[in-house]
Length: 118
Image (cartoon, rainbow, N blue to C red; front, side, top):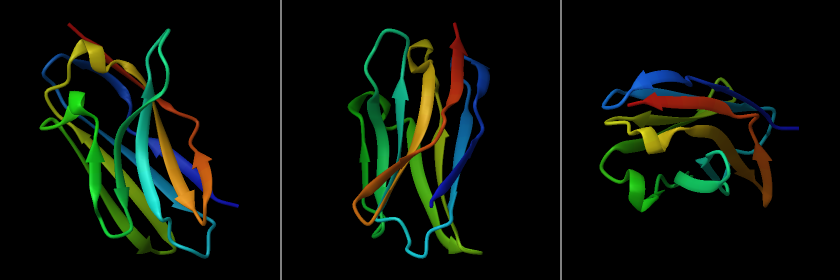
């Protein structure tokens, strides 16, 4: 069973930065893909950024140039995916969820709240 531990959310002023981290453990196999989604109040969950095992990345248009996703694979049997968020805007306020795909199965983190004040 894959376990996910998220960290790094919080309150920041517009223009500031935060770094989210998600550590995945418990799988014999390294994740095929890892990513971050977010859900703002009253809105659907949406993809923020993803990264594959070959480090190919994909970003939502709204965060391109401001957010950077990266991953560290198989460090002490853990895979970690980080999301560096710069130039944050109030519209980035949401609960951010880590997603890890292992052998065709999705594993979600519990979410971490990011609040950007204007």
